[in-house]
Image 1 (cartoon, one colour):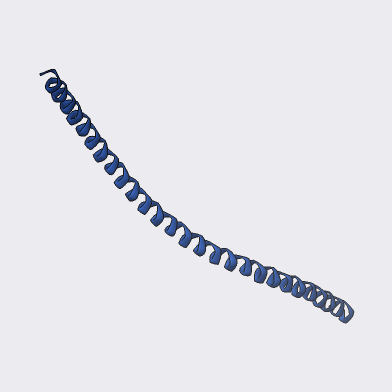
Image 2 (cartoon, rainbow, N blue to C red):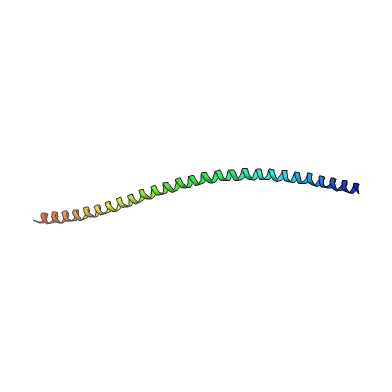
Length: 99
């Protein structure tokens, strides 16, 4: 009976050593996984900052584009007005030349 108890204790001891190695390997894997998660977290924060900067730049460029479009519309109106005035001057000059 004592031999059976001794065998069981030895088997339990052997099993516990294997389990300790498994737990140690799991700890190593968790540490490695945590390091990877930390690196991903840092990269994600950097990507978020870059994205916010790009969004800000996009807003600035959109405002500049709106201003350019308004300036072009204004200049187009002025050019049309100049054409009308030149046509009027041309008409008046032609009439004066006929006199």
